[in-house]
Amino acid sequence: MNVATTADEIIFGNRNRVSVENAFQAIYNITTENAISLSFRNFWSVAEYAPDKFTSLNRDGSLSPYNFEATGTNDPNVRFNIWNLDLRYNWRFAPGSELSVLYRNTVSVRDGQKESSFWDSTDYMFSQPLLHGFSVRVVYYIDYNKLKKVF
Image 1 (tube, one colour):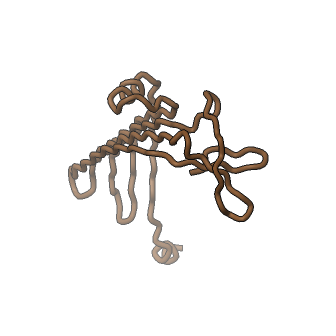
Image 2: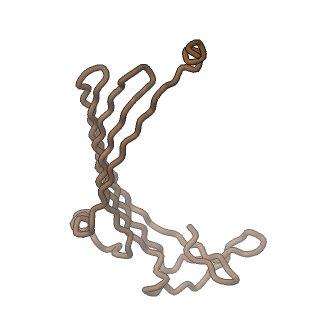
């Protein structure tokens, strides 16, 4: 994995990565035209580079050992945690036509706290501000042949 790029070199490293993904989805059909769906996803990942396994890319495509010193500003070790919650209402009001209303709740964290556990990371993530989104989408099918006959 590409760790850093300097003016002269591209630096690679070997890393260990641990990921956990939780997902849940439910759909309730009220009628044949109306449905409500709930979708939840949580993804957590930690990537930690081996301190003595950095290499640089040579012009011929080979790799040679590189002494890369990770400091606070260039530390490639990372923790990533994201939460998505979607609540959607769909209404099929005509053949091929649909109204969709979506509420999305999301929060994500990407930082260098690689030592934290899944539960510590999740607690920290929910201390961050949540992002709320609301959208409405209307798709209306127009039959060109029927429209042509009218005019």
